[in-house]
Image (cartoon, rainbow, N blue to C red; front, side, top):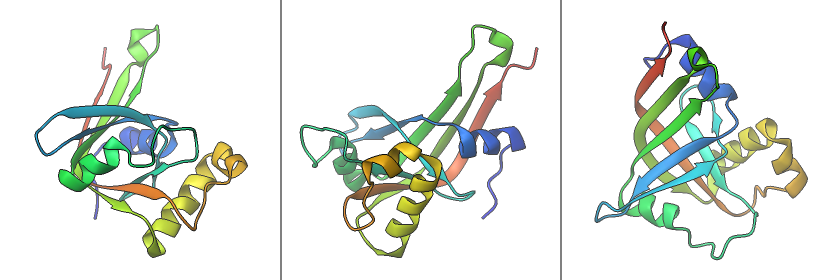
Length: 143
């Protein structure tokens, strides 16, 4: 699948360090959380990592299971507003907990983030949100 987006936007998706994942429950209540993610050119992956959380039954995972429609926002802010830009990915998500796609997602995240290597992000257990983009929206200052 070829994603229709400018080259700068795809580059942003590949190299940005954090995005904001928007999910909604079955009733439409939104939730936005910052996430680390990896983009392989077609699919986006974000792991539920070992950082302290009150529960492993996270609302974002329940939301994705109830309502797979998600958005991911990656933005670049600068005090020099001629450098502002954003990329929004809209798509369908699912939760991976094992299998080849899960392992590949973990490997991509380990390659991108040395912090995940240091904390020992596991290939054997956990959860990954997989986003299959349907549409990419972009904007950057064109002054």
